[in-house]
Length: 309
Image (cartoon, rainbow, N blue to C red; front, side):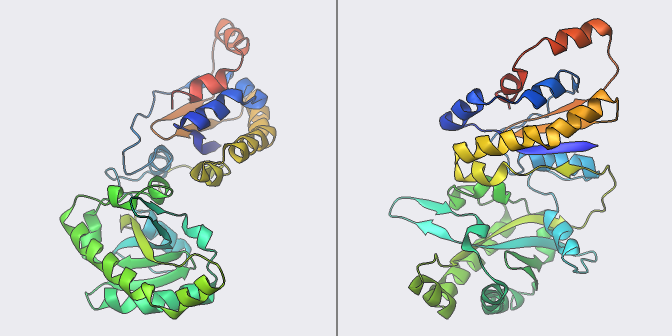
């Protein structure tokens, strides 16, 4: 079993304070039985966050920073024939536009239903198809595009951009200039679209832009099966540290307690704790009696270890 926990440790001061206040007895006990692998190092400015790097490695993928083909994988899961094309995930989003600040919201916060999403997709689709791009609708917040220029276009993960200024995360790449132009055209089209008139009349945020991510041709999953425990993601992206702490306690009382039971039975186990910069893997390995006893007497090591992520 391989468990992956994204957003295990925040970088903000408020998030660090919440982490320091957490009591996670099952995780503490579990880490006392596991051995740390070398740190998967990175920084908070990389396009691919640590959990995506861990997942890509576990799946046996190859790819540079920001060039992991999550779009093609999601498109295949949505029933599309990806073939040998290079795909990108086109996420419909709301940009909060202020006088001096721009912020991208989580696509899920739009709460688009299928009819709204398809109406917007059908409106913007000709802008892409007129330039030779293939477009496909997968789900309300998952639109797909395919074009040869996406084969080597590095893009920032949604998990990097949500809650931040999207302009700062636009890639420095020749193909990105074309994407930026399309983005401007889509924004102008959506500004006067009847869908957004109806949304704003009912007090809802308009769908006023998109974010392109996860570009590249499909790669088969060659690695191990794994389980992603993503309950921390939404509250972390909202910077709701009370909800994030509660989600951590639920993980500790549920999946991590079950993992501890597996470790006590000597069953194969790998745990990946992922922060905003680094990821740390822990594996169950045979150890000497003295080392095992020493680990089990260490208290509250989870918060200490995660603070370094």
